[in-house]
Amino acid sequence: MTATRPVIGFYSEFDDPIIWRSRIEDELPDVTFDLLGPDDVKEVRYALVWNPPHGLLSKLKGLEAIFVLGAGVDALLRDPSLPNVPIVRLQDAGMGIQMAHYVAYGVLRFQREFAVYERQQASRDWNPLLNIEPIESFGVGVLGLGAIGSRVVESMGHLGFPARGWSVSGRSARPIETLSGDSGLKTLLTCSRVLVNLLPLTPNTERFYDKHFFDQIKPGTFFINLGRGNHVVEDDLIQALDANVLSGALLDVFNQEPLQSTSALWHHPKVLITPHVSGLTNATKAMDQIISNIKLIEAGSKPTGLVNRQQGY
Ligand code: GLV
Image (cartoon, rainbow, N blue to C red):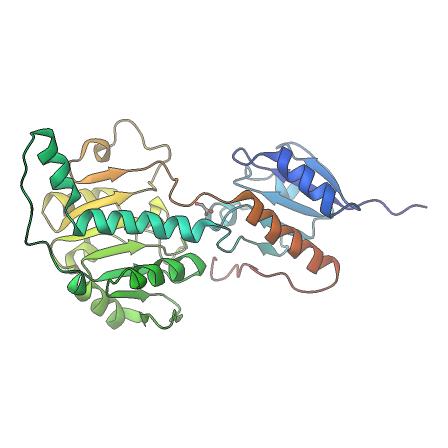
């Protein structure tokens, strides 16, 4: 009897399966690459997925690991029938540098008051603003210090901003000052002119940015969200903007995506919106990571980027 070839099953409405197929066939000649549909009942050893419909994974037979084609696993962990096999997520995979640039754009636009110049240009007004806030006192606080948050906070430090990081787990991102717990959060909120959300979405961090949170921040703080929409209570965010508690927000993620056309955020004068593009997965880097992890597992070793289901990331 000949041993059956292991199968890699692929499901994503976002990623191009053709490049994945050709790279996997080149590098893992002993496996078969197959596309997964929601109703397939197949023998699959490794599933490579982004936002599969609930139930798809539980129908697969012989599944040994799930590889997520992204950094966040919140949507996957909400599948009530998720099989109890190791889950491996991407770590950075080209997203960190893009997100660092996204944050740099938001922070510099705010600190250098580029929005004012855009308005001035529209009325041909030549009016240098000479009292912009100095960079030395313009604190940037990053909440969430995973692979991406650490990259973002470090890059803001390199740009000369007093950058601080805060994490639930107390993780360090040396040489940047890192904080945790309630008292650490208080310090972060006192010292920051910009707050950047990069927390993982878990039951503990859902609705983290609510009225209670915004009541504690320094009036005039700018908010950047590139974590998940459900970290934020959007009505409370709008209230904080209207009450001038927040001076503005740059938002990449929303409670519902695509953002509904009826959302007040679209037209809010203090809000800048991008359609969940702050960090796009670099397919080559993602393939490098996943293929090297599959080789590790096949050789009997532990992959990198294993998700802790209890923690939710
Ligand atoms: C994108 O949002 C990701 O989690 O990779």
